[in-house]
Image 1 (cartoon, rainbow, N blue to C red):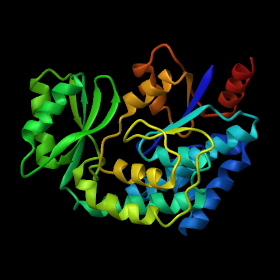
Image 2: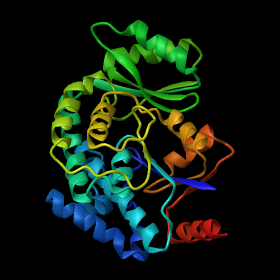
Image 3: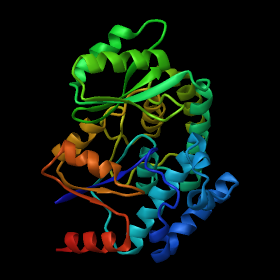
Length: 311
């Protein structure tokens, strides 16, 4: 039974996250302290005390989620949890997967994702961009709707999260038009998302170029565990390929459904969400109903999964 560890990204954060895990594993607070030293502010205090509006600012959310993912990973390893056969991360979570696989140094990654957040926030003025979740519509139909709207303003599919669950992103007016057209085409719901940054679309192209320049300046190691990348649903060993995949990821869609299916085809039969929340566990149950899915939210979760794997 092959296991794939999955690391969540932006959207899974919450004030008070991982407090229970921190009570049982000193590695949790130590990981946040390491990130705080790299960033120059108290990331643990922000995650525990808020305010929520500050935690939800993209430049803060990204290092917070990275630290949460790696803190959970370190707790797993400290408890005796084995290294999985595969790894992947959803959007920002891909950086955590690369840290866990030995590709990126954690402090380097913390600074990178904070920069990534700042670049994303600066790429479009407040109110210009938008994202929306489209539920219950075929991917090809939604892609055709977006293509028909694109002109002076753009909209495109940004996150292929699960069958019938796709997030679109682009200029606010174009996103609104796509939502209306999707509802007319039979979508069950078209929900604007409370975000200020239109991730994974062409509006992030300039930010991706700047991020690529920063990525080229840090040490990139070969992965100790295969990491499936969002942008091309492939694994990469060379530093140049990994840098390119991370830069392209910022303005191209997250192909999460295809990633989970590729992991299944490679032999993964158990998927483990490693970080705050249970967003990916929920998506994975929609993608592959036959696979075992676990979210590591507590010591009990960790110990139970270790027992199951040993059995």
